[in-house]
Length: 471
Ligand SMILES: Cc1cc2nc3c(=O)[nH]c(=O)nc-3n(C[C@H](O)[C@H](O)[C@H](O)COP(=O)(O)OP(=O)(O)OC[C@H]3O[C@@H](n4cnc5c(N)ncnc54)[C@H](O)[C@@H]3O)c2cc1C
Image (tube, helix red, strand yellow):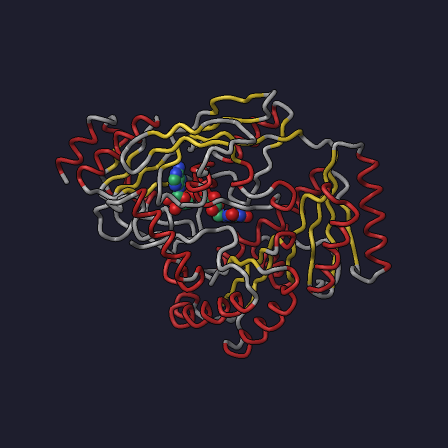
């Protein structure tokens, strides 16, 4: 290993190869504090050429590499194992926005660009970069691509995969694949770009990307509404989809229990709707028409929803600051859960037609088998994506509870997901957290195909081994 470290010094300056514990530690524990690993070194390259040289050295010396962006992922994908033999390759120094192509409506960014920095750069030129999620101040576009992140705008603009036109990737051989084309049509055989997106660093290291931009909406109205049942929220979604069509850019559902937790840890995030409704839905319409036009449309749809008894209360944000407060309320649920202590997360998708029965049955089963647990259920309802999270009963030690109950709770929830033909990972990926469950979920044929791809692209198994699939 000493030889390998010496070889690394020929590629990177000493200060970009971290080997002391106090320097490495900030890179070794994931955001949820669920996984802590060890690393031979943490390396901080600045260019794709440096990444390629490092990977070639890893291949020669049989050293496994864990790519890392903002380390905000929820599945432990960017955390090394406990062997101390892997290196972490953090891309934060690769943070240049290379180009905005106004005519092509694209932005070319390096993998280490913070998501929020890309949004701001785009907005400064009157463009919208629509990817948006609670971790946007610290997650990086390389990590977003590697996890195919979703977030709050998927309903209108799709997930990260849908926003990407081209990639630059360092392969397991240490070659640089330059696929940085900003083309909306390119039918030239296998789609290599789509192979790397969502592969969580197991097939290649993303060093740059060409992403789509959209015209910045000039009017945006955000509302919070109260609903009594899941079925009302789904019928409400369908009503908005029918009346507002592409103007509907956000539809987020929050249960009373999730908002109670929010208020406990962030009192300034109290729900402005009176009477703690069972379901609070955040809805956003955006358009390039005048503000008055969109507001009128929103009010008309809300009136129709009241008349059909789909909602019992509504409050429309009067200005951008208030709209931001509504969104912060939604985004703070994850933070409130972290404040409360470790919880059992299930990031799942269910077909909307099966959502009501999923929630009713799963809630009943969970409450019967694990009395007193708190079901913190919220999510991007417009995408059928639920964050179905479970916290221990009040007063019970979180770690001890999770240790005993994690497996049976996961099994119960995932069996319900399979029954409804859903997915065990909607947007957070697989990482090490869901490695075991993936085989059963994907089925033998799909799982073998994934392993075949991994073996073909990374025969030495040096790229993020034992994440997503084990070969
Ligand atoms: C408060 C909060 C809210 C969140 N909300 C959402 C949400 O709404 N939707 C959502 O989808 N996620 C959400 N997340 C999860 C997380 O932010 C996303 O998964 C994000 O895309 C991870 O980006 P990152 O840069 O932190 O990646 P990391 O955590 O560093 O890495 C994630 C995975 O990608 C790999 N990787 C990282 N960079 C590269 C690269 N350049 N090349 C190849 N592989 C790479 C890593 O090895 C790892 O497997 C949230 C997280 C937090 C903390």
